[in-house]
Structure formats: C-alpha cells, structure tokens
Image 1: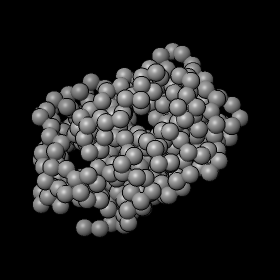
Image 2: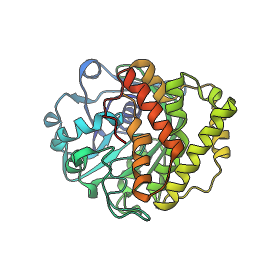
Image 3: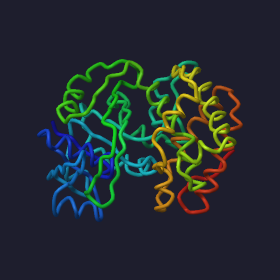
Image 4: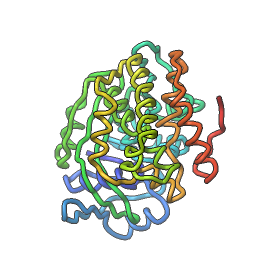
Length: 329
C-alpha cells in the first residue's frame, strides 16, 4: 500500500518505520533537519532494546510525492490549519486520511453527535479550511495509545504502548478491513471501534487536565495528583467533560478517581504539553480545551472549571509565545 506520512516526529516516525518494515511504500512530507536526515540516511526507531531502520521517500512538496492510498497525519494540532491546504496532491478520490493526533479533531461533529446536529468547530478549524481540504467521507477516525519521543531528527524512541483504535467518524467500521490489516502487518495492536468518537472523548478525558496543568506549573503528573487541591480541581474539570460527553453520544461511565489512579501508576512523567512548553513549541490548547468549551456552549452547559483551566493555559502560552490564537469569550 502507498502510505504518506505528514509529520515525521514521534508518532509519525513510529508508524512510518513500522509500516516500512512491513513492506509498505512510505512517502514522507518533511522539511529542514528532518528532511535532510531522512534523505541522507535511515529513519531510526529504538524499541524494546532493538533498533529498526527504514529508508523512505522524503520530499518537501506534496506534489513530488503524489496520490497515496492512505495518508497518516501525525502533526501537532496547531500546524494542521496551515498544512491541510497543501495536501491536495496526495489526496485522490479513494485516499483514506487518518489523523493520528491528540484532542478533539476538526471533523468531530461534522456528522453530528447526540443532541447536536452536524456542525463545524471554529475553535479548531476557523473558516473551515481543514474541512475544505480533507473530504469528510474519506476520514478514518483514530486513537493512538503509545508513548513515543523524537530526541533528534529521524530518530524515534518507543517507550510503551502499542495500541491503535480505528473507526468511521459517523460510526461503524465500514471498509476499514484493508487498513486494519496494514497496521496489523506492522505489529500494532489494532482495534476497530463502533463509536470512535467515544474513544477520542475518553482519551481526551484523561489528558485535558494533566497536559495543560503540567505545562503552566512545570510539575510532573505525580506531583499534580499528590496535591489535594489540584487533584480536586482536576476531578471537577473531568466531571464537566463527562456531562458534555453524555450529550454528544460519548458517555463515560468510569469515575474520575479511577482514571486518575491509572495516571498515577505512570509515576513522575512529563506530559507532551509540558515538553512542548519547555521546548518553546506551540501548545495544543484548542483541541484539548477550546473545542470542549465550544461544544459545551452550544449545548448550554456551564463549565466554570474548564473555563478557568482554558483561561490560565492560554495566558501562560501567550506569555511565552506558544499560543497565537486571539483571546475570545
């Protein structure tokens, strides 16, 4: 299968090397040091004490790579608004587009959900730029459960997790058999979900608090949960997100305390958003916080704790130059 990778960082690299090792034809859209590393040598993945190497086709222009059978988008969310209009040369009428990204995706309510009719999320996709660039009917919903880092260009370290969940945005798994087989051939633990939106909301439920609070405090997750006041605030935000999920067809029956007990087992780890903040990279604020708040507003649900968390996070990010969106109500 011809597979394009957009975003050659941690997740993109992990998937790209694994898929290339399974014999698939991999093309990578890259630039700068990453492009130089990929064109001048191997894509390197360190996992389970082993080193996997792959040679792939890397170019700076989508025109040079052409139409793909499967296009995996593994960008940080703030970049997609600018990159999406450039991808048309890689998207044919049958190309399946799989965003392997954090948070609420731009397509999340384009097919409606629960009490909401089909609608766009302007907090993620102002002007509908992404939706106009990527046909909704060709989207494959995905949730990645893996801990991966990219310490250097074209060098990936896989720490834990090997799970990928796929499903159609409007529900069901129609036509996903061949794509599932591709990922299974690469050794991933593949699951098909009848309600991929619920899987996305559940993952969001676990990281929409830990990520931003760790970023503006500089604290690892164990310290956040050890502070009783912070832990209580986290649970209040999670309760609001649970209430939203109940109204959009994404119910969560688990208790927040039980979900946080799983997070505690991970020990003193730095979230991806804390790592982005320390490195001065754009933070994924809108897909984690602004989108849930917009959904709540459309449903008429009050979210005072989510509001406070969003306000604090974007003020912090605005102060260090890692959030460029205008502040609105």
